[in-house]
Image (cartoon, rainbow, N blue to C red; front, side):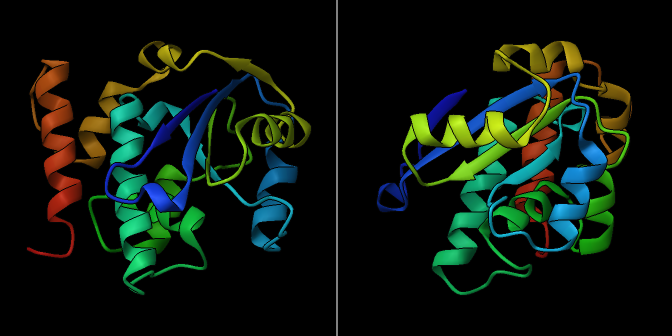
Length: 175
């Protein structure tokens, strides 16, 4: 698990990001999310549609910004992270593409705020799988799916793809 401080919102606390592989309780986690279980206060993101840590931090930053400015479009800052990963304003599509599904095997878990050791303990208690280093995202990511979701075209350079993804996220709702 890695912890990061958002430069624009240090008062919001650190953002904790963990990558779990081989998860076995995706259907249970999904049902808890649907039921808005308050003990599961985190974003659960399909890991194969995230380029790297910067990609997820862009969504977290926008979600916290929306929360701070009372512009949140979903239930809370954690569900807003999933929504803000999407390049479109279609919330249902965002959850279908970027959120946890019953078939999810690789999962990014993101929590805004809280003590790092307590957050990691909660994540390990809730998610049944192997906690691995975030640099494994590069092996998990599905470039083909990412290019399709963000309409990147035939670009092959991963640095350029990340720039195009970031641009699409930033322009969402403005064009």
